[in-house]
Length: 364
Image 1 (cartoon, rainbow, N blue to C red):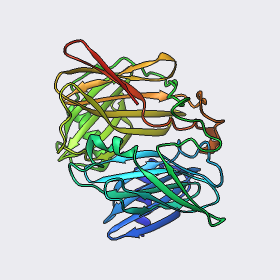
Image 2: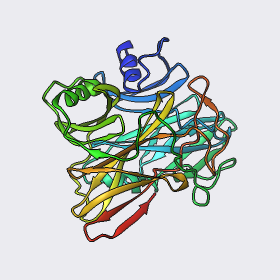
Image 3: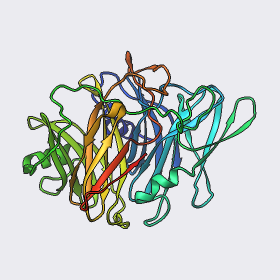
Image 4: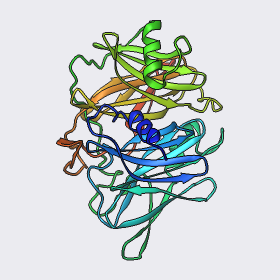
């Protein structure tokens, strides 16, 4: 593992602009791939790199609060690309080892573990249980096995399972709560993105060459312009304000081998961004089948955020409140003095309307 790998990971996580240097909490080598956890200015994240290129990254800022009990572990985040499924979550202070069972193969995958969080990943083939839209369903069948310092073995299943000190997500799930961001509006207006803005997004996300990317989704929400772009099957998400990049992330490729069924919508990515004008931002995107006219994301207190639907894709984003929600515990400090609410148990609820006027969902 090189210093360039550490810097690349910190940059992919959005930690690269801090005054202090990123430090490695733990790392491992899996064939040609390097997995590492880094910490910078109180923020913790996980990356998988190959040949110095970040293939996957996850910011743990919303995962570490509240911490689980010392002898407990849970998983909270599922990420899927065209060839990789990554799982991450929280671990108590007494957890010494942890492994995830691949529900398709039964193989046990050892996790990288450190500083109260853990992560694991494995390759998936196109059309497999862990690829494309089916990955979220596969996540429901995941099992984690972990050992604690007293020598005991434990098993946990389901995202954010109800354990000691946690609310049961089936009876009182914490929900995403709309926060405030100056200049943001829930109302989305589809736009034709300018070539300059697309090139700015491509450069900020992964230094792609000018003119090499196409637009999948483009809209404005108040003062902000949102883009999802494609570069030879790889995707990136960016938000601009007055032509200037506010945040950007390379997302990897989504599985193009599985078509979304006619009349349905699926959620494929949930991304969180911290430190945006002192707030946290959540972004969701997915795909739609023929006949889907609109998609709406449902937050707490009856708040709806309409998505933009274009080119068989949909996307929405919103500022998230850092106040605790029903079913969550008191937030613990992360990012220095910033308190972050418990990560809701799974993705937000959403619904979609088809050309016959019927609304379907909502899914969670």
